[in-house]
Image (cartoon, rainbow, N blue to C red; front, side, top):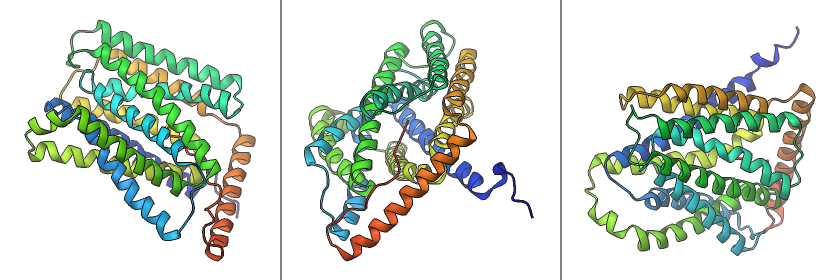
Length: 343
């Protein structure tokens, strides 16, 4: 019997399901942040603190249980923690000024930033098609900015342009964080990176909260409507941080990028049906532009897909072999893991 077509295979449907799950996680974090902003809660760092605590407890506990020695110096994780915390802070802060839809679309700016950083520092090679895709994607982002500056018939927040610029700045920090994490995962292992990111992220968040957000936290009326979005944001972020490396192993970065793209349309649906807001027509043009750009950017020929599949399989085999040796030699790390890319 002939094998089923590639698009009918089980791994394709598993990848689609997991990709949409992660996409909904990203959308839910945006929805939670937008809901807190509508209720007048302005504590961006506090929203991320619980996520870092969960990462530290779960992955730190795993690290201690395996009795693994750190393979990367602690101060590098400190720098990564600072960048990641401030990226989350800036993007969550943007919800105070602009709409959920704008944030979800503009965070695609991290993709061209990642391309530049990986090209310079990780020596990743990109063809002309990749850069054409990025150019189309950037054109879509410019439409979002133009819409927020010139359209006036929708409720977007007190200062849409300021919010848009905050998202772009936060996306650049996300790109730095993601490329650094990719490098660390190659040199170390996923459990160590997530554990140390959680530990230092929690410490930095705690310090920043004590300086910037004490007054806001005291003045907030903590009803169920304020507490639930806080908890929902943290849980969604924790699951997102944990699921992305798994999706990369199963179906690669192409499916991940295309799946995350659908979070923009989920955000549009939430804005229309949950907030009953009018969506400017330029958003749909911008979405089409970013979708087209990301499809061009993510497209790979059959030869490249085969090479990527072989690389992922090899990485998983090496990780399993190293894990077996860890059981015999205490203190040895988990070996190489697949690339982690949040963009």
